[in-house]
Image 1 (tube, rainbow, N blue to C red):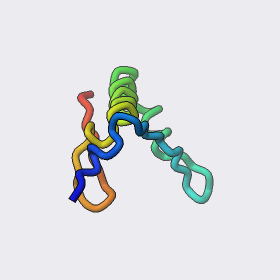
Image 2: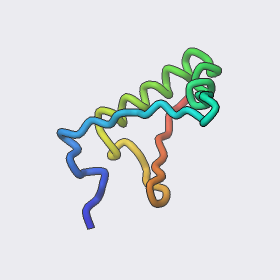
Image 3: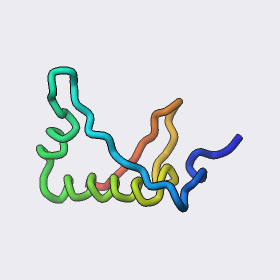
Image 4: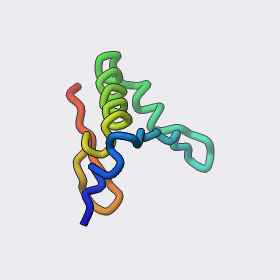
Length: 72
């Protein structure tokens, strides 16, 4: 079985999708906006690392669920 963290890792860049609820709310953005400047910077740096390195920067939890940890 191929490890999805390594498939196309050198050429595939991940893109984050802007999650919106059916009513138009953006809970992820609201959460990040509510963090301190240093914590939101850490989250955004973690997101950038996944965008650059792909799933090698994440830990597989179950099915299509992956975890990205940041210090903050």
